[in-house]
Length: 84
Image 1: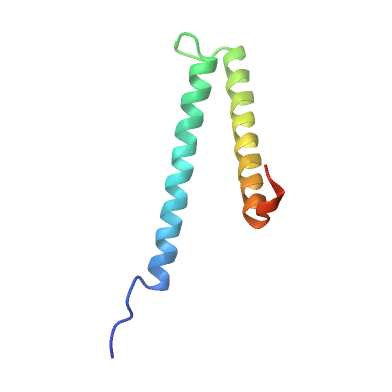
Image 2: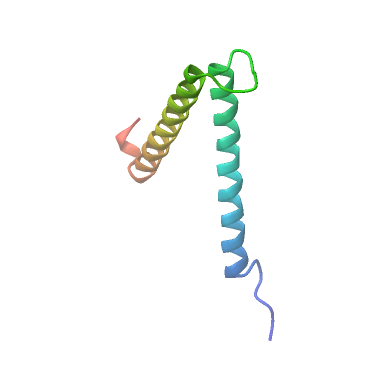
């Protein structure tokens, strides 16, 4: 019996999970870079209350914006005539 060509279903699922993990790690790295640069003026032994609050708000805005963009892109893909 001949082997099927291409990756198996399990391999495809594994590859998809790994790609999703890599995308999540990239998003976290980007979020960290953006929010750190925006909120921390001079690193010390601890973060001030202002820095902590700024990082928290920055991360929330970043995540909300990313989710909004992904939802709009998905909607656009389903209905190309809708426009952005």
